[in-house]
Length: 193
Image (cartoon, rainbow, N blue to C red; front, side):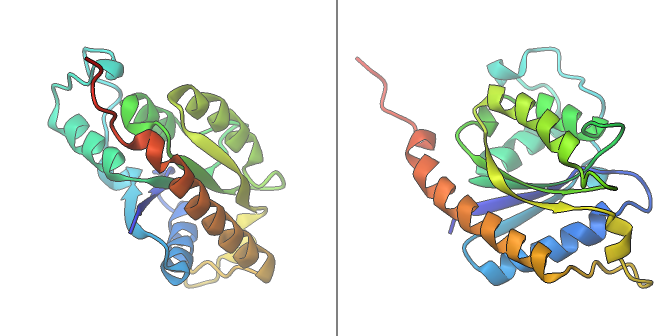
């Protein structure tokens, strides 16, 4: 089965992203099309970009970069659980993106965004501009969660409504379709002689 990497892009203590990601992970398991790799940027703890060479060269000198590269390389599709901070993406997410280059290419990306009234959509728009440069294919199908704290109960569990569940299913269906369609582009071609 292809691998879907679910990335939690907030590292802030008490973040809403953790219960949202746990819910989405359960939805993805129920969907059943993907093996899952859940990456929590709070646990990954990438330092601020510290590689001396441009990422397109893949001449990584740090073990944390090599490990991050291997995880992204192994993924066939992405679902990013992202907050909106001051109308944009979180700094840890931008840092994690910038560490790598070719590892991202020809893979579909779905968004589970959250926030206040805008539901994180301004951050999604900002991320789309960045990832298309890396040949990532962001999908229009997404899960946008407005007023996210209203969906988190007293035990810290995310309690979605039917609209959010339907959006998750639609996005997972599209991730499966796009992953299959893009697979040929991720397959290395023989060198020309």
